[in-house]
Amino acid sequence: MSRFNVTRRPDAIKPLLALGEYVRNCGLEQNLIELVLMRASQLNGCAYCLDMHSKDARAAGETEQRLYVLQAWREAPFYSARERAALAWCEAVTRLDPIHGVPDDVYEQARAEFDEAELIDLNMAVILINSWNRIAIPSRADVGSYKPAKH
Image (tube, rainbow, N blue to C red):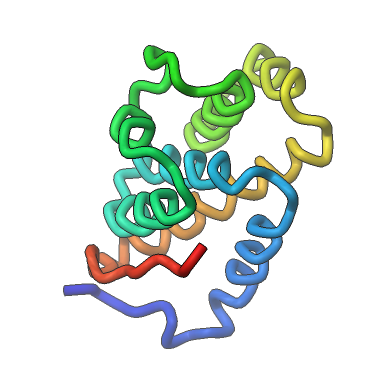
């Protein structure tokens, strides 16, 4: 049972909905975005968002294997260099080091795969999902009822 339903305050989430629309249409690959949304939700322990984004990722053609192994992406051979850079960026931004922020080596890895505009868009995707995680977790959003859109 959820504690509260943020959709009852539509003006409160309007900026996040607009950011979500931006992220969906920014030009980054949809499967890359879904992997990032899933990884941040794993790090934050957001069951609602994991349910949602695993369904969206599968609907968009992502494989079960890559979703199952996402938590151990560093050890798995089936993520591209671009995806690895995005996942490293996602982890660093989600778990900002209190002293050093995002390490230089993670930034350099990201810049090797993303131009400046793409890196900004990737960063916005990470900000978006961390914001939604921080709504879904304390509200105890009901897990399991989400239905993905048609792709």
